[in-house]
Length: 197
Image 1: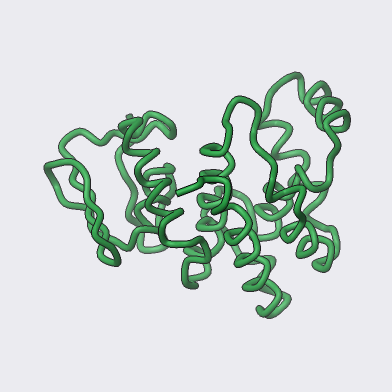
Image 2: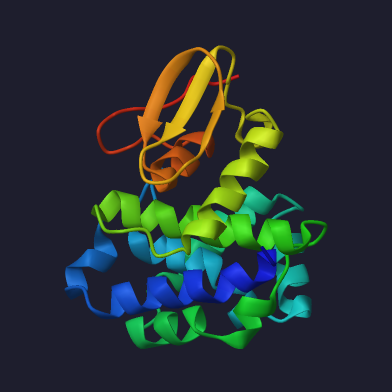
């Protein structure tokens, strides 16, 4: 698939979901440690909100540490009105953005993984297109778990909602979205996680 083409429907689907939920859902925990749903949205919508110059200033203030920047911006901007978050999720600026050095593959994985941080935590259907989720599964397994430090030694992953599998060994079976979350180092609501490398 054209990887960038999967970004807009993923963020748009997340906006549609979050526009329909009770207000308190925005304060529910996500799969990202210490982040509520609103923090995840504030994080992924940074490209729609910050100019390159503003981003550079934020990075300088964070001492060049992207994790510090992410936590700072998420904490600060999580309190923006829901209407602003939803508009930014639907922004063409966000849909065309690519992370520095990451290209379309990085843009798609960022959108899909963080959308799953919300939907899996809320036990809602995946909003990313099925082919986008499979593309991210292929990216993460091609790196053999290294992108998020998971150990895939003697692990077989099997999707129960599409014809996708990878590896050999102890079977981990789940829907494709939950497999992406596991490969991204997340712990599922049922407690399942992959070993760290």
